[in-house]
Length: 196
Image (tube, rainbow, N blue to C red):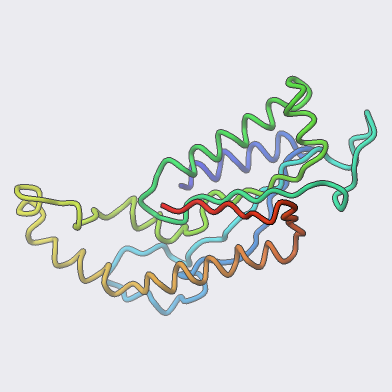
């Protein structure tokens, strides 16, 4: 996760006219530092949650541009479910494709001149941290479970003590606050939500 965010920050530094990064809020662990019990390897201080805005800059005057208020808005999120590793990677590759395709691909150029793409790679960074470090004991069977014996109760207790519902709810509130700051139009009276 940290490497992915580093690469996105490098992308924003290399293409400041196309990518801006905004800290839209803090993860649950960052807001609740009292959860550190000295026993479990939790991220110290939690994480910032970042939103990327990918669009052609208003300052780029090589051709006429729409202002931010005139552009369509699109919000893409990933990293809600901590153990789904592929969606943040795929979203990052999509962002890179859009940035590298600007002024190279006519469709990408048109999209970025007429649309603001807001992307949140990790809505639940605390959960991702845990998923990368601790096994999912619900998926262990037979010999694997007996190999985890001795550590299983440790992991089970640790995961049971985390308030997972609160992690998800607080992270979702941050995404909703971003939506309130941006005007996401719904012309077709249809909102597509990824359910998994």
